[in-house]
Amino acid sequence: MVKELLEKLSNAHGVSGSEGSVLSVIKKELKGHVDELREDSMGNLIAVKRGNKFKVMLAAHMDEIGLMVKYIDDKGFIRFVALGGWYAPTLYNQRVVLHGTKGKCFGVIGGKPPHMMDDDERKKGVKVDDMFIDVGASTRAEVVGLGIDAGTPVTIDREFTALSHDRVTGKAFDNRAGVVMLIKTLKAVESPFTIFGVFTVQEEVGLKGARTSAYALDPDCAIATDVTIPGDHPGIEIKDAPVEMGKGPVITIVDSSGRGLIANRKVVKWLQDAAEANNIPVQVEVGSGGTTDATAIHLTKGGIPSTTLSIPSRYIHSPVEVLDLRDIDAAIEMLCVALKVKPAI
View 1 (cartoon, one colour):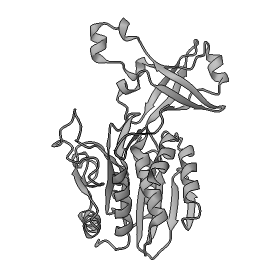
View 2 (view 1 turned 45 degrees about the horizontal axis):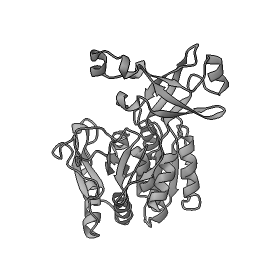
View 3 (view 1 turned 180 degrees about the vertical axis):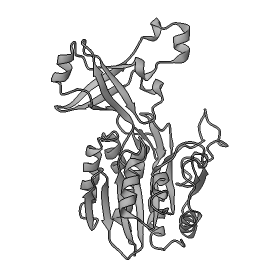
View 4 (view 1 turned 30 degrees about the vertical axis):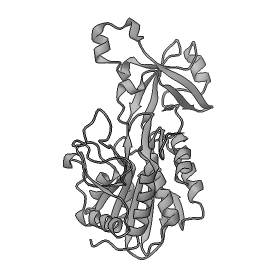
């Protein structure tokens, strides 16, 4: 089921450049369900379902935003850099997992206590450079003895939890939701085309895996599966993010105000037609915020007709992201139906 798979993937850990544990889950899920499963030199996992000469690339990034150890001081406090788009106050006082050479080590992110901040410091908030990780050690040697040193990846220690009404919360729904969509589609789809299911690396730090894999595979069209921001909760207006949770997956027309992806309209129509013909709820998005793997893919070689199919997810890039499982179900159904018909590109 979608819920159980999302839980497994959300609870897995894999920051940009260290996606191995997520990759292991995906491999296990897809074994026996695809014609070929291979890793490329970048670390992308490529699943192939062979068909005719028309090639469709479905891309979902495996990595999550996280941290990396930069420096350990003499008293055993660990300084770090952020990997991906963190809002710094989100990190303050979080519990974390350091993935060292001797296994997992738990720690907490500390900083100057609010009680000791002056008014100006409280207004500005704590910056990443002012934070540190405390693993309970008293010296640098004790930290190194735990298998931790410069370059150790760090993730947030937070687990998947069900809310009410088919809604769930957890870390890394960006983009384990897209990974679920891709796994489930690859298992269920019956298509005349050759399908490349690509689980990409390093999306959160520059769309890197999508760029290299798209160049190597040279597909005829592509869809990135990801998440997007809904405007259905306090603090954001629907006019600024006019999609909502529970009303179906979202097809991107434009993201990042056109600085990222301007989707191929024929690929957009292909997905819209599939949804309409099968009474699948769907939304469209013209966005001003972030972008996805589709931006790198559509600019590869001579250009690859592309769009993004996203799941509305609240509070993305935080440890408590929220989505509606029914939107994922609808996205999988839409992809399986669309992949039976060749887009008019």
